[in-house]
Amino acid sequence: MKTYDVVIIGSGPGGYVAAIRCAQLGLKTAIIEKYKTLGGTCLNVGCIPSKALLDSSHHYHDAITHFEKHGIDVKEVKVNFEQMIARKDEVVAQTSGGINYLMDKNKIDMFQGIGSFKDATHIHIAKAEDENETIEAKNTIIATGSKPASLPFIKIDKKQIITSTEALSLKEIPKHLIIIGGGVIGLELGSVYKRLGAAVSVVEFMPKIIPTMDDMLAKELQKALKKQGVKFYTGHKVTSVKNSDKEVIITADDKKGNPIEFKGDYCLVAVGRKPFTNGLTVENAGVEINERGQIKTNTYLQTTTSNIYAIGDVITGAMLAHKAEEEGTMVAELIAGQKPHINYNLIPGVVYTWPEVAAVGKTENELKEEGIAYKVGSFPMRALGRARASMDLEGQVKVLADAKTDEILGIHIIGARAADMIAEAVVAMEFRASSEDIARISHAHPTFTEAIKEACLAVDGRAIHS
Ligand code: FAD
Ligand code: NAD
Image 1 (tube, rainbow, N blue to C red):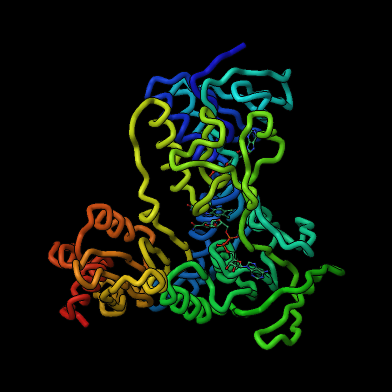
Image 2 (image 1 turned 120 degrees about the horizontal axis):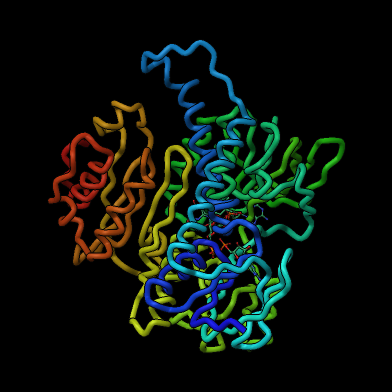
């Protein structure tokens, strides 16, 4: 029987990063993945394909809305949707292939099949093509990720009533896409199809979209997407979803409790994701699952069985690829006897709409709830020379700083390139910078990052350009 220092079940960003770090630290490592391609949700049906389609649709939308103003005459701009999807598939295949290369380079043994626990140190691998095998693991890292969640009365038929997975590989551009859930997936994929010409309606249960983010971001993003033509129905409770004759009919109760009907050709259900542990037989290893279906872990990400760890979407916390990656690294280092640490408060959140949305640290509501006195500095993108040059005038940066110490507690950005700009905020907060620290640092001109400096200056009422 093959024996390993560490066996990792699941090859998403949590699992494959954990495997590489284990190998780097000299641990004999194996990874088990049930699908033929490595990379998990993120690479195959998540982060990467969604960003590929967001970029393609952004180019098209730019061409039809901005090129003329820029002085670029293009005679006929058309969408070749088949090619757009084919390019997305190519990007996915290349990225996933890159993970195979990294596994080989780091001498990590790969097993294709479904991993399940026989006991706390033996993993059974049910293979589709070869003979089943059992391997021995001194330590195991569960990184089995998540699957789309749904509502009890919805039957996902994967044709018209779909999840993000199907929405990333449609054969046609919907005429009217009705999206249940105004969270990250709903707004990113809604943006893709709106830009490509679909009518898009977002039905959200909560009073605002992206409900966990700062109110300013939700308000500004809704305003920007509304301008692009997306229709929003916040505070609406969906009560039924049915399909008949190529039509999907959705009923919901509006804010006053009155029934309202939506008809479209596709319904995307984007109401969150749920941890995935099917077939793992964790009970054989004494690993417990909580009432939300997540694997229970302590602060060292150990499960209720000390040599078995769990990371990423299958445990508590934000369902984000970079969170899973940090946890993969942390567990590998713990197993190797190091003392790593993750600052969960500084895991940034990004929505890749246009304008982009990015945030790190506390929201204003959280600071109020925690009774922390704070100061606010805001700066509008439209006051930046860079924003005018590129015609990306929407959005703002908001900085929240401690009223007494001036330490930055949260930075919330909506605007062009916010996804990349948030890194400055994370670095600043990791080093516990004050708003004055950032206000006094030179930011290249003209760049969008000047809005961060100006918002920090605004905390003290001394922004230069507004
Ligand atoms: P996963 O990536 O889900 O990987 C788990 C792997 O385990 C899968 O490959 C699965 O097949 C395998 N597995 C499960 N059970 C077994 C078993 N018993 N045996 C063997 N293998 C098994 N996050 C971001 O940070 N940025 C984004 O832009 C972003 N965009 C997204 C867009 C979409 C449409 C979706 C759906 C998600 C997006 N996410 C994004 C979230 C991100 O994909 C997840 O947070 C991330 O993939 C979680 O990583 P993971 O390693 O925990 O699990
Ligand atoms: P989400 O939690 O971001 O959004 C779900 C939305 O559905 C929420 O706004 C919620 O209020 C709403 N909702 C829930 N029940 C509802 C109901 N009955 N009727 C109407 N609305 C309802 O989840 P998601 O958008 O499905 O994404 C899943 C996960 O994937 C998220 O945790 C997210 O972090 C991750 N993801 C991240 C990115 C990114 O980082 N850019 C992109 C896509 C997905």
